[in-house]
Image (cartoon, rainbow, N blue to C red; front, side):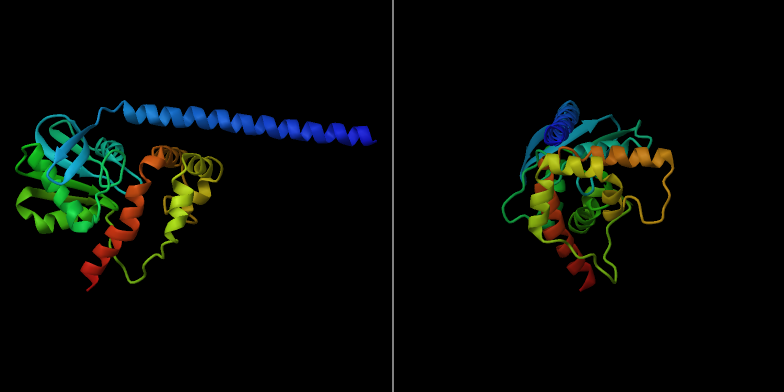
Length: 252
């Protein structure tokens, strides 16, 4: 009997090790694909009067500055822009401060982020552009319009952030640093607890039944956040500096 239990324990350990190895192999494969996808898009870092900014320009015609949302970057802006007919426009998709290859300046704030859009247009020798801002990107886009109205011909906001009577309480800052600075932790969360993460961040509200098409879309959105380690500085800056500054300015 003792030999049986020893063999049983060894079998369980073997199964656990095989499972861990399978998870590790899958993670390495998927994070490698995410990094390769990002690096293959062809963005460039442009020196501006407000510091270096990452941008991707595609197409010709009238310029449209695309400002991404939370956990994004130029790649998210490009993906969102492709949801519309952009064949007659020049899409200028930017990575905001702290996202991907746009560094977070010292003492960065909402005004400086807004001014950076004007600095980018200056560097690209563009006098005026339309602005398409998504979700959390709307705060700096609105401030850009307020500070540099002559540089904007149109302001389009998709699902913009706006202060309400009840503000969502943010978790302690160290939670973001602990959970989201690790690509593996975030990958494990969306891979094995995807539905809970979707509900937590509002991608799939409670009680809303997703069609297979929507479910697949949300999975692509979450996978598109990888690698989060290249986006976490922007997410923290956005959550604990930009949004509070914006909410205070419009609620005063």
